[in-house]
Amino acid sequence: MADPIQLESFDEDSYYRDPLGFFARLRESRPVAPVRMPAYGRAWIVTRYADVRTVLTDPRLAKDVHRWPGGGRSRPSEATGVYAHMLHADPPDHTRLRRLVQKAFTPRRAALRPRAEEIAAGLLDEMAAAPGDVTDLLGAYARPLPIAVLCELLAIPEADRTWIAVTVAAYDDRVQHQRVERELAAYFAELIAARRSVSTVFLLVMAGFDTTVNLIASGTLALLTHPGEKTRLRQDPSLLPAAVEELLRFTNPVNHANDRFTTEDVPVGDVVIPAGEWVFPAISSANRDPAQFPDPDRLDLGRDTSGHVAFGHGIHHCLGAPLARMEAEVALGALLARFPQISLAVPPSELRLRPVSLMNGLESLPVRLT
Image (tube, one colour):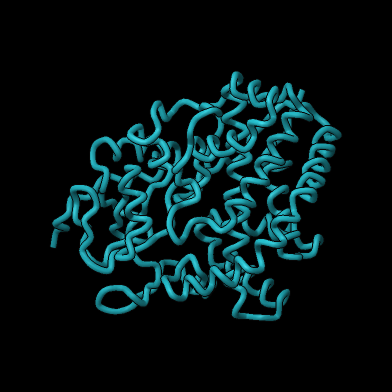
């Protein structure tokens, strides 16, 4: 029987080349659109700012698959059990889990800035001493800095950090998903000797590492391709907090929020999404919506970015947002102070995004430091 709902075309190759372009076309033509997504079948993409904010706070869109209309079901690729964390929970379980994590997370986070500055300085020293005139900023700086800070936060032994970074990076490959989940789950279970805590630590590593890597790398790229704004920031480091907010809005380390589903028919804009449908709010599209941010494709470090949704919105707003902001301020400030003449080593057109639906990140970022 033919699908009665007309699906929008979703070509993975074109999406991975330009996810913002894909979302922009939907935002203009069909802001609440069903597409055929790998592993999910039909899913709905929401692209306009106002609709995205609404979807992110509507309790009729749930995370706990036990609430699926007509009976519970499994998420795609859920076999390893590491998804039983607060990101896939609804109140009251979500409230309880988030409170427990925040209670332990906040005090340690506040003391990490000096350590983050030490780590950044050490990585910059290594970059300066490395042979050759081209450096992959992503591999040498944007990736090792967040994983080192996160491992400090979680008290993960230094000897294990390179393995964790390599293992997490392999998560991009669909064939490697379950292997990565199994190995990280086994490692954390042994490390903390508390099986019930593994899913939360897995969430902190996956969400707190990859997103910040993307912010540092893509934020650097945005500054290098907008030299006027780069000079503005270098000459006035007090702009760093505002610059990070604009870089979050402009670069969007995450393409869309994690999956949720409708527990009943839900009107969104001019469309009614039926009960029992996966929904993906495109937060990157919301951050480029001209109805909310005038001239949204222009990088402006002095812009009013209040209300951006790079960290989500509502009860699932990113718990690690303050940590990511701090790391980006440290990373970008130290980088521009140490290497004020840093420049791209290749044309921007040669850079490639990782072939991942959720994350919006570069595969590499070749730069010249002087």
